[in-house]
Image 1 (cartoon, rainbow, N blue to C red):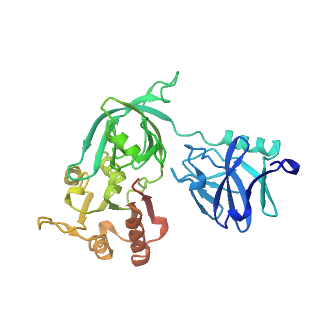
Image 2 (image 1 turned 60 degrees about the vertical axis):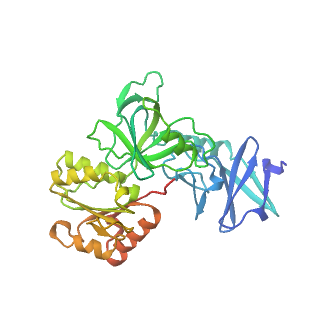
Amino acid sequence: MVEGDGYQAVANKKDLQEGGLLKAEFPGKSIVLSMVKGKVYAIDAVCSHEGGPLEDGTLDGYEVECPWHGSKFDVRTGEVTNPPAETPQLAYEVKVEGDKILVKEKSKSGIADEQAAATTAKKGPPLHEVTLLEKKKIEGTDMMSFKFSKQGTHGGGEPGNGTKSLEYTAGQYGYFDIGGVKDDPKGPIRHFTIASSPTEDFIMISTRIRDTPYKKRLSSLEEGVKVKVKGPEGRFVLHEDNSKAAVFLSGGIGVTPFRSMIKYATDKQLSIKILMFDSNRNQQNILYKKEFDEWANANRNLKIVYTITENDDGTWKGERGRIDKGMLTKYLTSNAYDINRSNYYVCGPPAMLNHCIQILEDDLNITKERIKVEEFTGY
């Protein structure tokens, strides 16, 4: 129902709670309503990145986070506050009369301002079309690794875009559009850390195969198929000051960015000292162990501490249990890995990540500035 001054009644205020999100229909589109400190805001409901439903996301203060890829927007203005999205959401004027929530499009000048902001926003990362070279199931686990060509069609096969190598920094990730994914609640695209090093002649990802449409499709891909990769993105990369050691805390599949960094540092013969704590359920789940051991023998600046959390047949000779203060201080007491001068990188599932951050900050008094985190949610 159209009210005065061009406003459209879209919802009842009783249906929107403080700190909540509510999808509503506006002529020709869906919008998402939010309420913060008693005030109602409205922006487009379809995420500008890959079309995720913002009404199914989470609201933290004035930021709404897309449930698909983690893009965040300011509900007051629609501006992007966290990538991968780069284009703002359209924001609307809102007023409340009684129980009615009324919405209208912003003035032409307001729309023009937003369009200008979108036009001047950074250009998104490039799109590459690459070829699947090899896939491998990790015996005794639910993990698989996939190798793609590094050279591919730049621009996703559009006319005028030639063949180009996918360039990235060790530790970054990309978005993989494998095609043919239907009815996946997380959407048809996933982002994966590029586990291969920039010094290698292929692009590799490793992931746990779940019972989801995307993961089923990924595991069934045939060698030679083309997939689209958008990227690279991410700031979970090695610091540049090689005089400061890097301490990696890895949990399960969270080891993928560390493979890229370790291989790169080894191939480039960097002087940076690297100490990695790699925690897994059992021996079978230690991903890349053979490679890591070979690189540790070739790189005198690299040391790897493996630990398993489940009981085994008695053949395991490494550490046991979760990464904790005692384990860390056992290896961080030497001058090479000065606790107070090292930088710390934590990657793994949320529980492991929170556990390790608490140890670093509360038990070892490591400042937040020297801790980088990358969360693997396991989807």
